Amino acid sequence: MFRKGIFDQRKNNRLEDYYRILGTTAKAGPEKIKERYFEKLRAFPPETHPEEFQQIRKAYETLKNPDERRKYDILRKFGPKIEKEMNNAMIQVITGNDKAAHKTLSKIIEMDPDNIQGYLIKAELYLEQNNLADFEIYFQKAIDKLKTEEGADLAFLKIALLAEHGYMEAAQKEIVCSKERYPASATQFDQISIRVYRGLRDYENLWQVTSKLVPPIKESQPDHIYLMIDWLIAGLELEKKKEISHIISRMKKLLRLIEDQEERDYLTSVFVDEYCGYHDVGRFEDAMAFIELALFIDKNDKELQALKKELVPLVALDATIRRLDCDCYLIPYLKVVALKHFYESFDIEPEEGFSADYYQTIAEYKDCNEEIAWGIMQIKKRYPAVYKAFQSDWEALFAEHTAGLNREAKRRLR
Image (tube, rainbow, N blue to C red; front, side, top):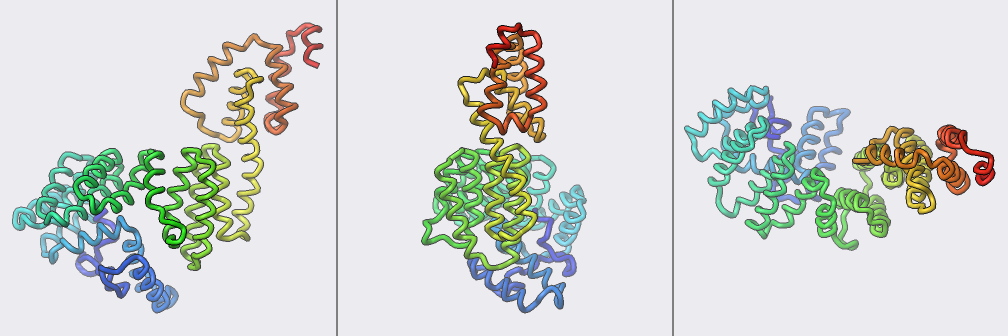
């Protein structure tokens, strides 16, 4: 957002010059910015220059992120010298006094109808208040003040703001319109669409975009690892088994090229976060992919080793449950019972509609005692991992459904 991390309160809330802080220019590419960042870190280590170090980090965190850099560049480019009223407006925004900020910004716009920054800040304030209609009005007023060739930058900013505030569907529509309006910037809109498609859980489009943006192996750079993370997530969600191993292999090649320990640590945290997300919903095989990537960065990390050790039997159990679910010789009753045990044991949220299917199936097969007992014996024989994981439940269920069987029926079960 405009209100966070951009304005230096020690300098009357003026926009900090992040390029000057890093010793570069607005024309510098990502690699140059990164190079300058590490040079500055060596010159101003946190132990001896904590204040400068914080400035350098804040500048780099903004400029290394394409979305944040584009928003920063737009504010830097179009923000006029901040006079008294703009200072007041920014203080009001930072302190959360939105009503006063609206009033001050309206006064600024009335005095200076070409103040693009005023329109943009006012637009975002409306967006924070869930007033999408007025956001559109004021953002369009900012666009109308621009030259045609500059419209793509502001369109990109609009998409970023919509996505940041959770308006993913509106952001998606804006992407489609912007790509038609500014075809020369289509690749930039593809890049920001990744964030939108992830927010919408539109993994088919996420797969298409990431597959297109990932460069050939010979042209790959370490920074492409973040694009490949999204590519891998799309592949996992769409169950593209063959492609997944290829993506992971390419990711490992890039990880070998990353030498900066701070960036390696950050990537490890990203992989662990993804592991937690998949683990918490019972997708243990997918969680394993991210733990192995984290261990590829540091194979000696004891905590990661422990997570993998815990995960190995769960992956095997998950795979066995899947095979059991496809077994045409087992009645549906046992399949839903096995799934219910699995969900409850690991506190997993069942798939939508599972509860209704479970109770319907239980009702349909509740009197099929011999078939149920025979099926439990088959699970014990053919799926020992599933039987052992929930042994007491299977034993209780077997006892329940054999209690009323006659001698002949029990003999058939042997």
